[in-house]
Length: 530
Image 1 (cartoon, rainbow, N blue to C red):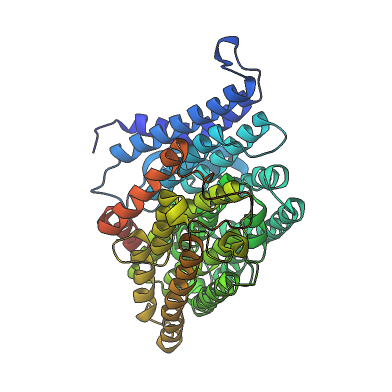
Image 2: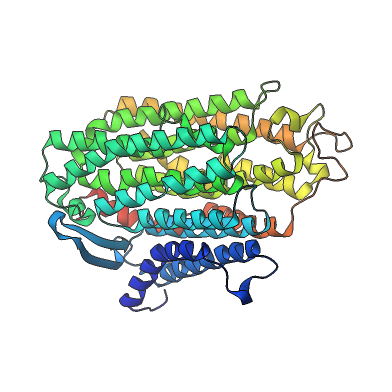
C-alpha cells in the first residue's frame, strides 16, 4: 500500500469519474495547432488515449493507496449535499466490491481507445466517436463509485445514449434495428427501476446506500421490500442480461463495432449484477430472500439456454455468427453470476463478483479476437471461416489461433485460469444456500449449472476445432488467404496482452480478488455489522 492522504484519494476518485466528461467536451473542440499531428482525426484519437490513460493511472494510484487491511470500509469518500429537498447527496466511495470493477473498467476503456487509435471503426466522425467513448467511461465508472440511489440511477442511464450511437453509427449490418432494440429494452427496464428506487428511498427516509445497508431493511415492511426488489431487480435484470430479458444482447453485440462489443460485455453487463449486490442484498434482505429461488431459476435456465444456443450456432451448416455466439455465451456466464447472488451466501456472492471480473477480462479478449478475425476475413460467419477444411489459424496465423484457443479454454472454466473460480464458487454457494432458502430447489439449479459447464466446454471446443484447425494450404471462402492472412499486429498485441496476463494472474492467484471482496461481502450480508 502506498501512503496517500485521504484528500488525495478523494481527488483521485473524483478525477476518475469527472475527467472523461471533461475530456469528451474537449474532444469536440478544434485541436491546438501544435497537437494536430498528421491530421485532426489522429489528434482526437490520441486525445482519447491520453484521457483514458490518465483515468487508468488515477484508478491504479487509488488501488495502490487503498487500505487492503480494511476492504469492507468505504475509502476515498466524498459526501456533499446536492438536492437538500430530496436529501440527495453527491456521495462517492470505494470498497473491496467496487475497486476491482473500477480497475477493470478503466483498463478496458484504455485498451479500447488504444485499439481504436490504430483501427478506428468505419463511421461518421472520429471526434464524435472519441467523445461518446469518454462519456460512456464516465457513466460506467460513476455507477461503480456512487453511494446515492439517485446518482446511481443517473450514472446507470448515462451509458445508454453513447452506446446507442456507437452501435447505430459505427456498427455493422442491421445496426439501426439493434440500437433501437437496445435502447428500448434498457429504457423500459430503467423506468421500472426508478420507481423501485424511489419507493425504497422514500420509505427508508434516505437515498444513501451506506445508510440503507447499515439499516439492513429493518425500517421497511416485507411488502415494501418485495416491491422494491421486483421493480429495481427488473431494471437490473435487463442490463445483466437475465433470461428471458436477454433478447436485445445478441443483436447489439452482432451489430456493434469491436470496441463496442468489448465494452458492452466487459463493463455494461456488470452494472446490472453490481446493483443486485450493492443495493438489493443489503437494503432489502427479506425481499431478496423471497425472490432468490426464482432468481436462481432464471440464472440456471439462462446457463442452459445460452449454452444450447451456442451449440446450435457452432454446428456446421447453421451459418452461426461468431460474435453472436459469444453474445449468447455471455447469457450463460451471467447466469452463474445470478445463481451465486441468489444463494445469498458469502461463497456464492464472492463467486458472483469473481465471475464478473473474469467474464469482463475473458469475453473482452474474445470480442477483440473475433473483431480482428472479422476484419481479416470480412466476415464472422463460422461456416464461411471454417470452409471445407477449417480456417486453420494454427497454420496461417499461429499467434492469433493460440490466443483464440487460450480465450476459449479460459471461457469454458479451465482450472488455473480466471473463468474457473467464479463459476465454481457460485455453484458451491448454490449447493448450500442461505438459511431459509429451499435447498432442494437450489440443488436443482446447481445440477443445471454444472451440466451447463459441460455444454460450455462442448461449444467452445467445437469453435476452436473449426476455426483454428484444418489444412493451412487450402483457401477458405472470403478475402483472407494463407499467404495474405496477417498474424497478430503490434497494436493488437499491446491491447490484448494485459487481458491475457490478468486472466492468468486471477486464475493462479484468486486471493488477489477474494481478499478484497470477502470482507466487504461478509459485512454486506450481515447488515453492515460485520
